[in-house]
Image (spheres, rainbow, N blue to C red):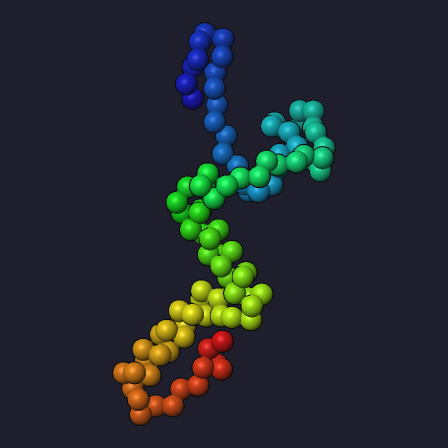
Length: 99
């Protein structure tokens, strides 16, 4: 909490539920109608690397589902199953249980 000058104190508040809008900063303060807010659209490049990776994965998975194709997690399972089958060709393991 840096003191900007002798009359101003800056406090940084981090929201626990980031997608949810606050209708006031402090309980008991005047509230605003958050349903009327129009958030600015953001670009993937505005996100930190971890958030960007997560959003890109979600977008990819959504596109895959729309196309009837496996999602990231399903592709990982299939890859693990294929690797297992290569190591154990004597076993007949079906993919229908994985997806």
